[in-house]
Image (cartoon, rainbow over all chains, first blue to last red; front, side, top):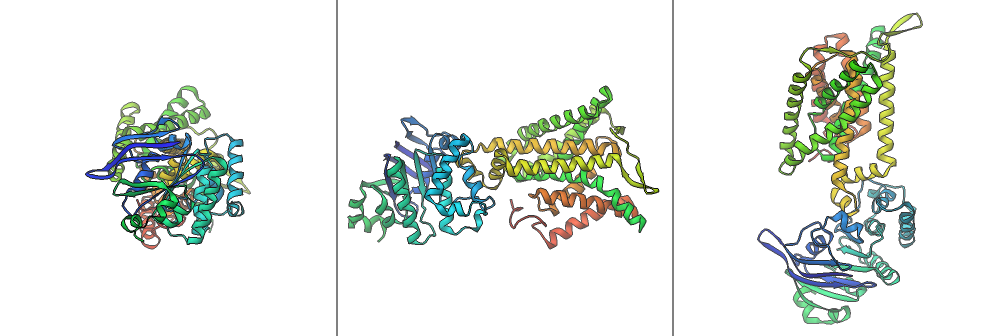
Length: 234
Length: 292
């Protein structure tokens, strides 16, 4: 579904990603884990079109999308939930959701909204309230809900655990994982919190200083003690 | 007391036009987080366009409609020619550039239409209405100005709160990155903001012209009042711009009535300074909205 080939991104002299190869299949969660500064957020921003890669390719649905504009990428079915509960606090919950699919037909939008409300019922209850009245976990649900409003084929989640209680993170990620299986959605999850991420993921990828050091089935990665000590710090 | 009521009533119509200019400033602020000092210059220019149409056809409504279209187009031109290239480097530079546009528009209008003040004939009677045995300081034309302003404010509010375009524009102003990630073409929204601001300013210009005369510099003082109103209102609040636009109109009328009209700009600046000292976020602004 989503594939990167030798993807390189640098900021001035600093190489954030050097030759990244990654495949994200449909129907499952792929987790990219690694410490702070490993290049995880850069990878996400490059995939979503917010930063332009120096070289390499991003293939989505067989088409090259590297260098495309973010607004076109999301319209083609690749939606990013950026780091830090990216809702717009001044808008209501309903407006935040509506924003996620404004270019789509009204009826398609309605179907997506029902799906989001089924998945996160709290958003339905709070629809007319301003987003800044929500708790952290509810805002993360809203951010994911907004991305789902675009009816994505692939969902990118950047550090959804940031600043949230572990129980809430697990709940949200398990919902996403179930959604991936049930609707054949490809999910790329980027996390510093390796334990939680590997629990819901099928495949795990360990990133260090812009390079993939290991990839394989998630359970293998979480049981590899050496790897954990070296790159994940626990 | 009669004087007080007369001065107060006389300020509404002027206040409505200040409110429209303040609205135009707020619309630009909302879309690109900067103050467009050329706004009154654009309004002056489009008012001359309207004057030309009115002089040749005698049709006020046609003149207004053409001015609205010209205002929108001029807003887009200013955005592309000056603001966009400069904005990429530094927003202070862009603000200075809007002063340049103001001067260029004034010079251009002087070359095309000359520097002599010209009269603009109102579409309805501009003499004080007679009611209950006396003449009031409100004319039929003032009522037209107030109704047009009210209709425009309601229309803009509906546009922003009820339509997809309005939601996209608000999202682009609050958080351009999230808006882009949601599929909104943010650049088009910024341009729409400048176009709507230009059209709003154009309406203000055409509405105020019959109250005095029009010359290349006749709207300069309006900039002082509109800027005061927009800033006190919080710079990103439509309702704030309208409230304090009309409020400024009333204050000007009272100051001019009890002392001298030359004191009005000084009072406006004092109010502006007091506001910035006491409530730097503006009355209707939320915290941090005005930090760039």
